[in-house]
Length: 81
Image 1 (cartoon, one colour):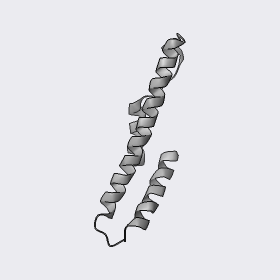
Image 2: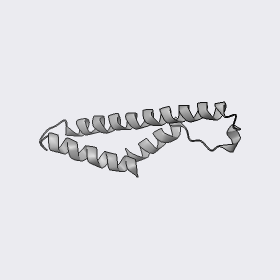
Image 3: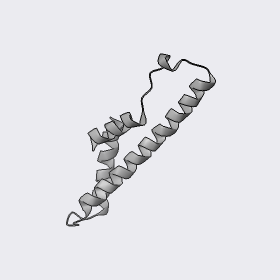
Image 4: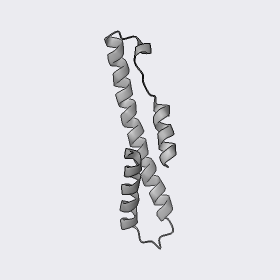
């Protein structure tokens, strides 16, 4: 899963930036991971909004197209975090 990979890479970067004795390393890690996840949700939101406009322009029946929502993406984020 991509989000898990992003979380691992972010954890590695944070651990390289801060010594293990740093009291704030967990806070820094959480903030960095959450910022990455917010960006992922924002990107999905842009894509979803664009697809919705495209479907309206093409006069597709929305019942014919299976779409996910921003809430679905946040649910996946919560699973990873």
